[in-house]
Image (cartoon, rainbow, N blue to C red):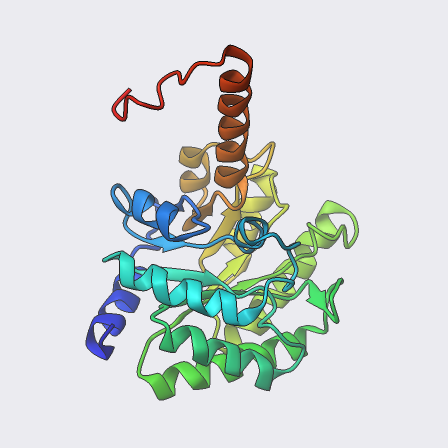
Length: 267
């Protein structure tokens, strides 16, 4: 991908985070799913959990980064829409490590990343917000060197890691969002937050566009749009649903000893 196209994709991706009309991302996990999703979507985003699972690894930076980088390169070469990458915690515990990882996915054609503050040393734990802010700042500097307005979606995990009561989790998320915004983040991603009242408070209190991940109990898209959410991610759920369908189909063929609809591509 040439630099001009990559920058155009980056600008397009920023513009998709609209008030009242959130960007809904049906997350991909390989090139085939990215191409299928691209037929009806304005952008592609990966799910680290789905990618790791497809490659035979656990989530949490267990998939080798060389493999992830190769996937990004093949994915961006296969679709003609913006591609954002779940970079987990930056594949390292330092700002330099995060910057190097971001540099590699930028070279591979990505125009956005998620970078999370709930993973350190291979363990699920909230890191010091200033350290995460330093990672974000280092990534922003790398993106400027590339001349790409990389969308940095700062993920914060107080709800996912049960930091405290719902109000305490909200306060922590708001505090971190402000710190990450000052460091150069473009969005705040808060998985595990499902209460619409708290989501609306977060939108009102943070300077960044809010990204909500679909889990059980999450309000409908139109309700999220009404309270100001700018981005909705389906996360690993599409892959999990696809695997259920494949498992059920395989069981049906095994039980019936018939091909079913598999020789009828349009069925």
